[in-house]
Amino acid sequence: MRLLVLDLDGTLWNHEDASQLVPPYKAEGNKVIDAYERELELFEGVREFLEWAEKKFVLSIASWNMEEVVKPILEILDIWKYFKFPKIEYHPNKASMIKRTVEQLRNIGYEIDEIIYIDDRTLHVEEVKREIPKIKFIHMWVDVKSFEELKRVLEGL
Ligand SMILES: [Mg+2]
Image 1 (tube, rainbow, N blue to C red):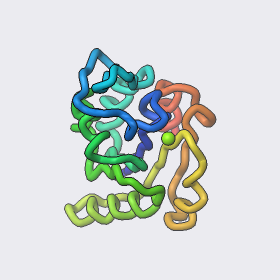
Image 2: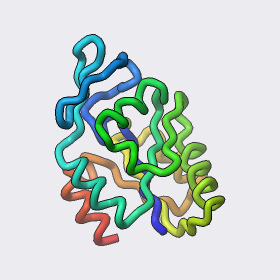
Image 3: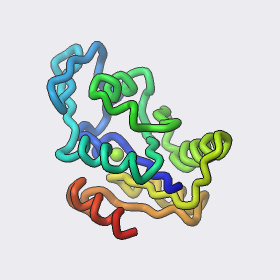
Image 4: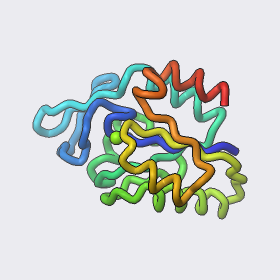
């Protein structure tokens, strides 16, 4: 199986720090509105991408955020269901998050033979590559400009 690990802020949605939002949330289509009427919106094509990708990959998350604030956003958008052992943790060590997800998947019988990591920032990439040398990194909005293009690139891998 191939594992696809996604970042959240600036990758799946347009908010740069979803931990600043305050529940309770309302959802309007691809948009979430917090208790202070602040908005977060999924980027175009995210839902279609996840629907397609879950048939080809094991999907997970590595996000530097507060889980108690951000998990309800994924739930109200009805996309939490796509992810296995998602990590939303308040520290920047994405290598640790990804390694633990791989370990948990292996423990329940998944053979993970390829890991692809998608992030809008390169901040964590050197460390992730040092700790998980064979990981493939796709720089969102730089290597690919849309979720439609991401799908095409993944189909070609
Ligand atoms: Mg990000």
